[in-house]
Length: 183
Image (tube, rainbow, N blue to C red):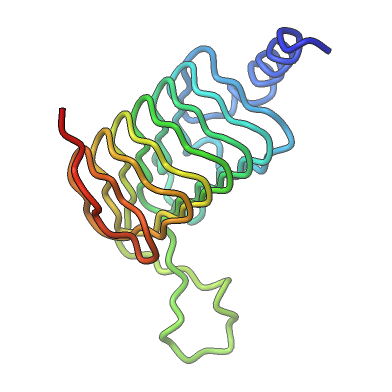
């Protein structure tokens, strides 16, 4: 099958089986299957955003408002996980490489209980915000309570937590600000 026919197939698939269930959706979204989609009614996606195979978009918790907001003209590669309970904002024109995890969910491990840690969810005020025009490198992990300024670059396999200004180059485990991009 030609690339053109593959693109058309996924556009039609998304139009029929995904768009009607999203909380808000722009035109030209393409979502390749198989993917895991939970809580679609609380997810907003801007126009011309493309999701590759294996994407996991999941809203947990009981809030009824939009929890995950993805801007327009974004490219989200294979096996990316975006999981939210409070607020995950991915602004316009962002490229996210494969195998990235973006989560605002915390599993409390500091309490003694018989309930397994993976099924515990902290419902406090958490967030992730990624500014316009940023690039998230392959295998990066964006942890809760992180703000990445516009036009920033996150290195491959970085583990990011905290606030980073506009035009940052961020890398490492834990991630640190390496430099600011200047014109």
